[in-house]
Every structure is written in C-alpha cells, then in structure tokens.
Length: 61
Image (cartoon, rainbow, N blue to C red):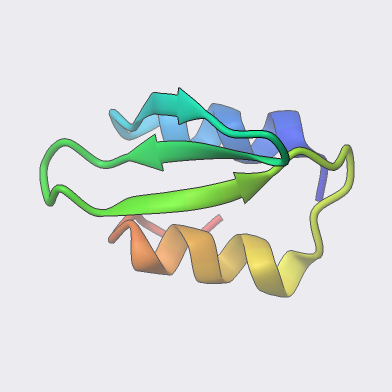
C-alpha cells in the first residue's frame, strides 16, 4: 500500500500527525488517544497497514 493512501485514510477518520521522528511519523487518534508509528517508506506492507489501522481503532481499509 502506498503511504499517502494510508495517511489519507487516517485523516479521513480524524487522526492527526503528532510529531515527526527520524524514520517514523507518530499519528494520533484524538477519540481514543492511541498513538501509532508510521514508517516513512513509500510502500508500506499491507499487513502492517492493517495493523496500524486496527491499533488506532479505525474502520478497515
């Protein structure tokens, strides 16, 4: 999955960028307070993308 598609999905459900790290970006779900690290690769494996979405308590991709 492309990184921009994952970020678009996160923004659609109200998540926001908490801070930038050296190799990851931290995104937060304000409804639950969960924070998840998103790698800065152009391609993110589908299994990892699903894990990120699930841990942020968002609907599936």
